[in-house]
Length: 334
Image (cartoon, rainbow, N blue to C red):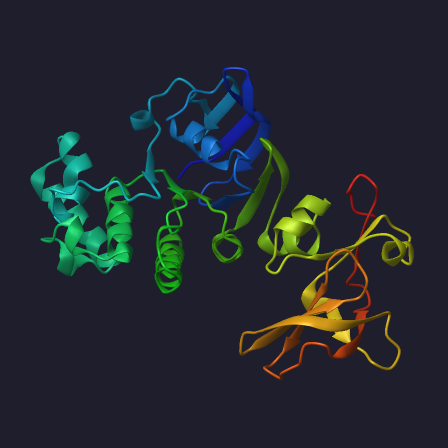
């Protein structure tokens, strides 16, 4: 387990500043998820923690010790990559055992660790197979197992599920969540652009934007109390509805935010009136896209699968106390 602190950490590639002064604390045993749009610096930040990139300035501290100059092997980290990075000519067992053998571990210890990790990940029946004989989900579990056998202080995951199809992502996400529960003495840092992964796996989420930290908090804290329009629009799927102009002026703000589940159909005394221009019926939920005259259609969620034809006139009202008001700088008005 490692308590990690980043103090004014910066990273530049030539004249390009990628990480622009990050201050962040990751608690021992915590599952921290980095999210943000492409190019925001989340993978670079992970690589700085791993030691795969050098820090331009600032301090990286593990358990009170500055580790900026430490090689990756001295940091007690294990990393799982998006691309699996398995050796194609080695069996599953050999792939998982490779790092331990390089470290000259005893053969009995190697065998015990590999078999324990394989059983935990339910790949113990695959140990004799080559990577080409495995599905994508099985290959990713082998990559996780290879990291697991090293008994690391810190697990680093760099978008490990992005190459999997939807069903495999769900199954592997569950395995990673169970791994965190079973190994609550290991600090885990996970990079993703997937909203569901971030919301379901994280103890806390760090939202990054253009090399800086926008907000850090629990998934529900970021969802319910975003500290900027950027965070409000980035966290949640579908994203928060934003209204400007006369719609916002009604609420004494520059931009009004409202989530789809907080919009009620109200044909008696509606706040907004419009027509359905599109509907996405997912079976359990029906998302209605309603043109009320704003820049974009409002997305309203209705529970159930009742069909609402395109062209239907609807009255809509926000639930009391559920609107988010933002000023001209994109900061919340409490």
